[in-house]
Length: 386
Image 1 (cartoon, one colour):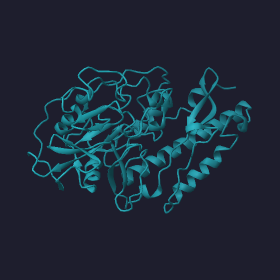
Image 2 (image 1 turned 30 degrees about the horizontal axis):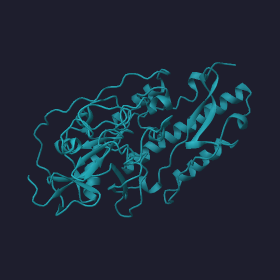
Image 3 (image 1 turned 90 degrees about the vertical axis):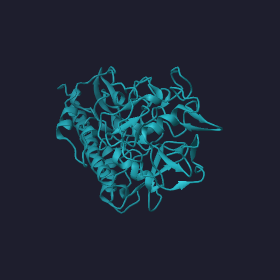
Image 4 (image 1 turned 30 degrees about the vertical axis):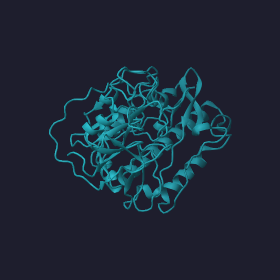
């Protein structure tokens, strides 16, 4: 039998969102990702840098002035309000919740789904070809409870093709495939079968031109990842809010005591959902640095549970203001701030940083997005200092 294992089921038809500009993809990135080395160990990640004094920015474009902070926001020393929880997204007209696993932008969401549906189709096709060549009966090795994956692909095709349907998630977990995982043959790692994760659904209306994202701050929901910087502020403004300036965000994160971390000046592992011991890219692809637009990444779990937690899911990570607190400003997802250069702050669950509220990444333009980029909103108070 020919040794085809390294080429099978690598789950990487690249599509790094690092090069998404004006809704376009880089073929070079896709080819580089497809040809990656199978790296089983975790590589050192770029570390977020400490905060710097921001350059002069244009005046804040203020929205509605509030006499008191809305219920879902926290009053930051009488200066402004900030969302208590990381943002999720709904459609501005219908209030239907959008999928947090695709960009909250119709063109980018549709492109990303098409690319990864094709990637998944190719992976299954290669796996079936390998098993036929190896003389392995697919029903004994391939599928959920003996089901044929071609049925899943038909379901995906129907969902993608029916733009008018409000489809439920296409591929749901079952008792025989928790969290939507399925064993597909051999991944070339010592003869052991490899678990492959099925794709989450993109609601058809989320890829239509009429979709307009509106930010929502609510507890116990999956926060919106895959957010480009240029989408974050309009989504806040649809909610009568605005994207926070970096200085505002850092002030809010440090709490009334002004500490480096929400809980104090000394880093404590596990207090916030940051610097996790594993990375979703390594688990899915064997390499943390490829496939950054894969819609499955924020569904990955390790032995301690989901890598991305629901909003408010780390109650020990709270920035206290008076009798109130802001949750998850460090970790969980990076958060875009209002800076035309393109800046996100706070770190995400697998970022190797101990900089707490001072963690920032300023090396990507506002068109950038990947699985780790989220946001939250600020709002203005009547009589607050300028």
